[in-house]
Image 1 (cartoon, rainbow, N blue to C red):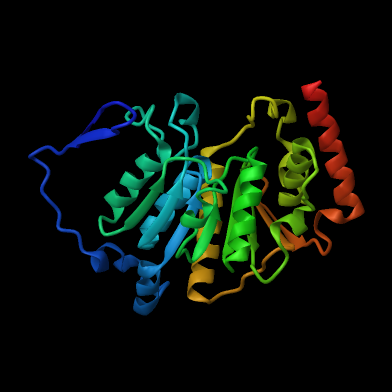
Image 2: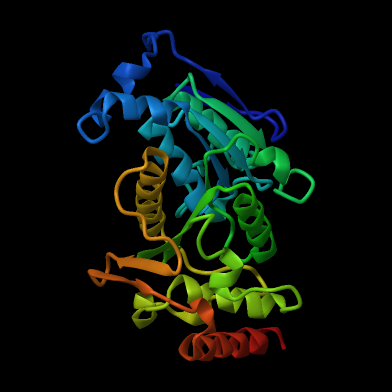
Length: 309
């Protein structure tokens, strides 16, 4: 198969070599190896499910591929950005053939290459107050692939999902680890857990998100925090951590959709560090409002504020 880039607005022209035999797609055969871990009836439930993924970058794109290979049949995906060289170290859709192409449109094609029967609705734009209603319409569960630094967008999506009675799973690549949280619409909310509210500065909200996502912070022994820049919305991130994040997020999605297994929603937190062979989990009874969490937040606020000054 050869891929010829066109303009970013039109995407790609895909030419299939005559030497490559045509394949007749069969859903049951394509996902038969899932059986034994899910039943035939559960696979059909996954086929009928609709998952919304906000962001198609480091974790969002891997989420899309992982769920497509699970046999999820319907997707709502959104991202306004286009692939660039700086994405190559970690983003599933970033290749020489996709540079300059909208991430959501590119990942929609990748989903359909795995499952041509998949229904994929694409928003090549930000999820905002103006389109969040349509984006979350008829959705069963939401996956957070939003850029770490886009805290306002994250609060919007989590708040609207809760209002609709939807679970939301967030899993981030943290060093050589992943940290994840699941939010039950009947449990502690995103804003309650992270202690976020209107009137806080962006720095205060980002600091709260960082320490609330990783209360035990296994990665601090090896990460260089000087490489984190709030001004440039940039921090170190690895493909292997994105893969870890997608694995645990997909497991949570399966449990939610099939109503099986053990889900421990916030204030439970989880972090698995492949580098340190460490798994940390626990319950922040008061979320980010505990004295120790407040101290950590204050430290990050000072660090981020010094960078901006």
